[in-house]
Image 1 (cartoon, rainbow, N blue to C red):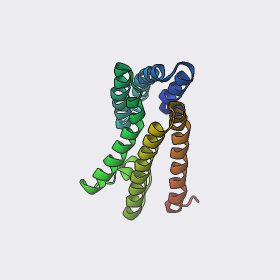
Image 2: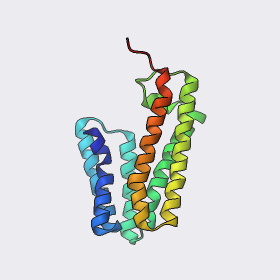
Image 3: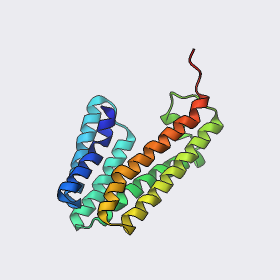
Length: 175
């Protein structure tokens, strides 16, 4: 159920886009994000990432609706990925904190491995931001929406599974 809650705004955005276009889809995504926050709050699973995502969809989606210009909503994923990459990098470089280790606190890995995981995610988020920008501003809106919903989600899942496979050798063996 938690996975559905995480993808709720994205799936509604996609459906609304296919039915009514980018501006209705943007409004639906904003409303769905507010509903998502309310739902996750009742379940006690609300995190900073959810608030950040809501703030960005409200700002960029709001600008899209107010100015009737889809450029702003197309920037939203790039900005979000950039903020994720910057947060991880600044946490590591400036504060000497490994935020991936904090996020995945159930795993015990050597510090050097956590450092590699962090930089892998920084690189992934940076590449995803560039990919979103490229597709958003070099292809039709329909292509961008499909990439945002299916391509980016698929790439994220593939990368996460790849990370899991790479880290599996560090997990304790079950007896």
